[in-house]
Length: 356
Image 1: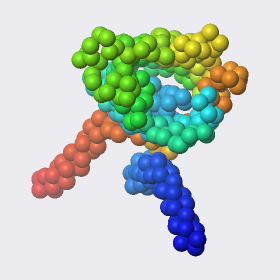
Image 2: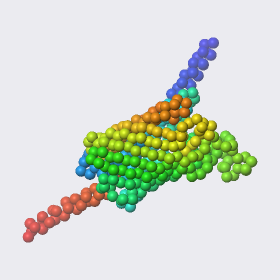
Image 3: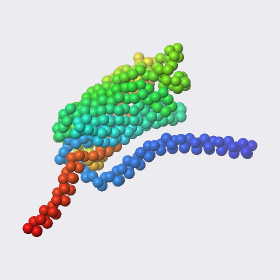
Image 4: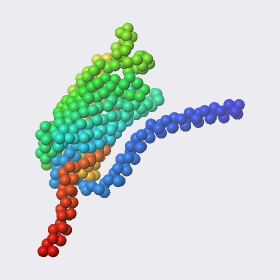
């Protein structure tokens, strides 16, 4: 009996240690990214001076509080962390998204890409983590001038299929497209931004359960073995968004915004519950933005959905923390090169005058 007791305790302790290790591995990625951000900040903050109010129309004047991304084309990287509390699947979601953008043609155009990673903290089942749908997009600044008090930006992106393995990927096994027209305006210490656009499915959803289709690509499967009708119907979604930002200082600002989307469930419309769920989704956000240099920014936003029905609520509330890092400044580099050339030529002219 003593041996059985010890053996049972050993198994229980082994299982508990395994669960702790699993949770540690799931959170290790986020801790690692946090450490990278801290090291970047420590190693680079001394090399940049704080933002100046002499040129308020820099790219950091227009930062989307919902995502932390620059509205105008810029050479930058964004790492954002979204926390969705109390989703309709009895889970909390932690989504980490990496986004990078590279401009060209004097900043009039830009290409960008993003990929999310979501950790599902689930109530009645084990936790899980998935890689989300990757996006590749572009941006166009028709006016081509960053020194105006207003701007117009046209941007779009293509989302690629996440793949059939739902144990590794999420986001939908289909192509989707995003397109938005953004208008911005600066008035004294205020900035105003409005967006209009949406998300459109570009292909049909393909089988996304390897257990059902045995891993055979859908184009190689015979017609008699076609999968059953999917539960989710792909519907284009219209998105309208606006936010107002007030700058207390050149480096600190607060903002408030609202987001409108229809249908309520976005692109993936649930066939089983679509008659009971409202088509309109509205969300308000408030937060603060801090530019601790001309190239670095941190955004903290709180998001609150207006629809509070407990049965089909998307989530109770959400938090967004985004760190953005901009690099490269051609104008500054040209000025530095000019100063270096002046310093090199100055002693030579002095020496020549002394000889004469």
